[in-house]
Length: 84
Image (tube, rainbow, N blue to C red; front, side, top):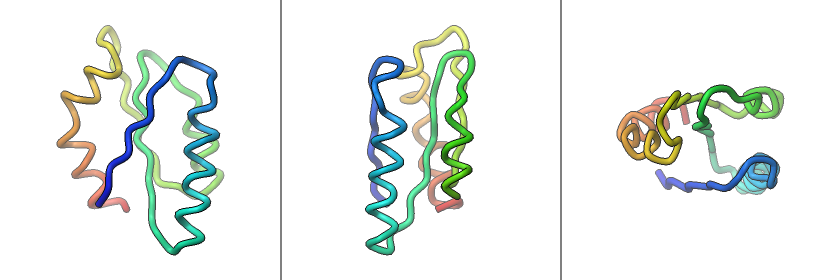
C-alpha cells in the first residue's frame, strides 16, 4: 500500500486534485481511498461517496489537523488495509 498526503489551505482545490488522481488510478486498475482530516467539520464526504471512493473523516477539534493526522497515522494505515 502506498500513502500519499496532500495538505494545504482551505479552498485551493485539494479535493479536486484527489478526485482526478483517483480517476487515473482507477483507469490503471488500482484501488484508492481517502481519509479527510479537518478541524471541526467537513463537507468533503459527499463528492467521494458520489464517486464511490471509500472515505473516512477525522475531526481534530482543538488540535491542528496535521498533528492529529500524525498522531493517528497507524489507525489510518490500518483502515486503508481493510477498506481498500
